[in-house]
Amino acid sequence: MSQPFAISSGEITAQIDPLGAELVSLTDAAGREYMSNGDPRWWTGRAPVLFPIVGALRNDRYRLDGQEYPLAKHGFARKSAFVCEEHEPYEWVRFALSDDAATRAAYPFAFRLEIFHRVWGGTLTTTATVTNRDTRAMPFSFGFHPAFAWPLPGGAAKEDHRVVFEHAEPQPIRRLSAQGQLLPETFPSPVEGDTLAPDAALFEADALVWDNMRSRACSFGTADGASLALEWDNCPMLGIWQKPGAPFLCIEPWQGIADPIDFACDFRDKPGVVELAPGADARFTLAITLSPPEDSR
Image 1 (spheres, helix red, strand yellow):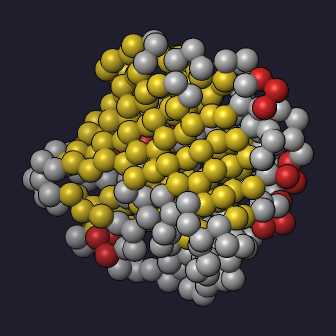
Image 2 (cartoon, helix red, strand yellow):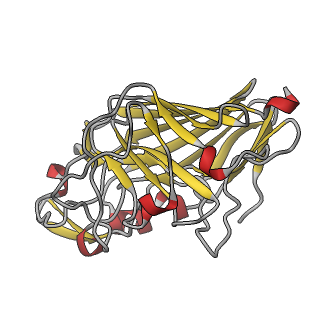
């Protein structure tokens, strides 16, 4: 990890790594950590941003306008060095990634990806802006991939944590193959009404995937302990994932999804891909609000 940039409101402090413009720490005023510690025994990620794809491609390749390109799972942004363009330690930090020879070999477009992190009170807001600097319509997907400590700080039991959605989510879910591609069938949802009780057994078959969420907000935590409130814009899909038994839970708003298992069409026709006209931009926002344990409020 490179030297992170810190931003703090007094109530919360966030640390952002220029590698991937990734949130790597989020603590409350007492110094308690709400993110995964990136233990390599489980998964080294903390909150990577996913661009220009979400999930895995069939054979890690895609076809676009008659040509084939290699692109690893979740795209290259999460492993790219972003430039810090602006840093106000008590409020915000702005990073940007632009195309270069290496990105164009995998994704043949001129683009700018800006990641803007801002703290205010107990809330961290991350806004991603994708700009098409090319002369052609630019297809892409984008996603957030935050991994929260599970259990959250404060002493509540892991099994007492709940994910509560903004709305009831009764629709079936999707699952992934062993190669990370979207299976064709649907599966009964583990959500009861608006509430999911996460358990390691749910993730033995990889992530829970919603390809058309009604909710654009949820909470994660316990009634009498620490909790998080999440709100997001322009991400109609969601993944919830962990390595079974790991001390984290990922709650991932997406505009995009893994390749269907037999997908062999042009990238522009892939489910979840959106297109930007030349000169246009698109924004995706995730706000995370911390509520510390009751004994510290």
